[in-house]
Structures are given as structure tokens and as C-alpha cells.
Image (tube, rainbow, N blue to C red; front, side):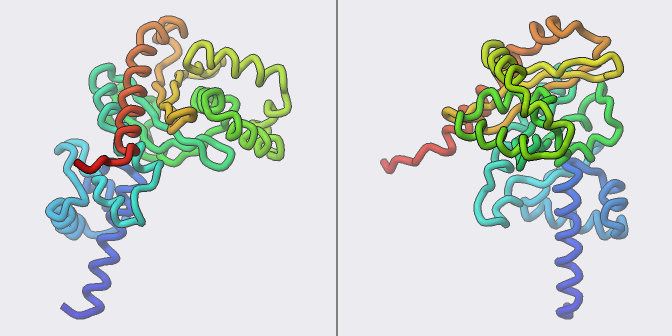
Length: 265
């Protein structure tokens, strides 16, 4: 094989991996649309990536997804991706059982960022472009994920986040200047153990979120979405909060176990 052919093949492999990173779980057709590579080329590359452990076939209908081995191509495991790797199986199982979509979010530079979303697995998902929700950014102060993160992160981190939000010109961060709102909201969320997105009449979808604890801080937040007409808020909380809290606890325990130093026999 000529050097130019080798380079072209390597670039194509990277384009497929990049597409899977953006889309999450993707079919051959979706990868073709994203990369503009020939279908036959994508199929061949997927077979190679499966054989080498970088891609797995989720199912014949859902398509393919990158494995955690892809993370080893970087300099170690990044925290965000490690949380996703640990949490996604539990989130997929929740959606398979309860049908509602779940999302995992992490704080990132003044916003909450969606890092995993089970919408493609949910028959009740309202977002027809579920793949596009990955890496979507959301306000901190007006979302369930943001409020629960702010309530349970360390005092030092909370002060830094609020200082950043107060400097923002975005209308979504105006509440950072409202001390009574912040005091009441943070107190309520800590007492309840979750944050519920305030529903407006025009909202079709609402949801609530819980923290995935990391010692005295928060590793991430996980929440579920549902149609506002399906439940009264308290009914949704009573039905699903224990399940979400158990899921968050399992993920937190797994992360803590991985972070614990190994002891030589």
C-alpha cells in the first residue's frame, strides 16, 4: 500500500470515530450522512474497528457505538468520559425498563453540558434529533441539572460558578444576581435531594435531576424527561426519584472504587 493510501485510510478511520463520538450510537446510513464516505467503506472500517475493540455493535437496529478503548487513544481517561462510560449502561437499562429518556450532564465553563442521552432508545423521546443533544449546553440556574449541580457542589466551586455567571451578559444568568432566589432554591434542592424543572404552560416536556456525588462534590447530574401531561410533578417524583437516586449511588460507588488507590497484595 502506498503512503498516500495509508494516510487516506487513517483519515477515514478517524472520521468514522469522530462521527461516533458526536452522534453516540449510529447506523451505517447515519455515518454515511455524517462522513460522506461510501457505504461500503464505512462497513469495512466498522468491521476493522470492531475487530480491534474500538467499536461495538449495539444492535442491528440501533447500529454502532465507540467503546471505552477509544478513550485510551488520549492521554489517559478524562473525567467526563469516564463518568459516561460508567453511567451509560445503567441509563440505558432505565430507559429500556421505564421507556423515558435520561440525560447525563456535567458543568462546563458556565453551563451544563449534555454528555449522554438515551433518547435514541426511548419510544417516548420528544426530540427527533436525539443525537444532536449530545454536547448541547444549557443554563445553570433555570434547569434541573444546573440547580442540582449548584446545590451539591463544594462551596468553593459554587462561589466560582456564581461569580462567573454574574459577569455573563446572557439573560439566562440574570438570576445569579438574585440573592433571595439563590438562597431559597439551593436550600430547597438540598432538602429534597433533587431539582425539578419549573414547568411553563407552553412546555411539552419537563423533568428532574439528581446529583452523582463525588466525595464532597458532584461528578455529574443525571435526570429523566417526561411529558408534562403524563404526570403531576409530585407523582413523577414519587414514582421515579428512588430509581434515579439508586442509579446515581451505583455510579458514584463505581467511580469511587476506580479512583481508590490499588493495594498491593
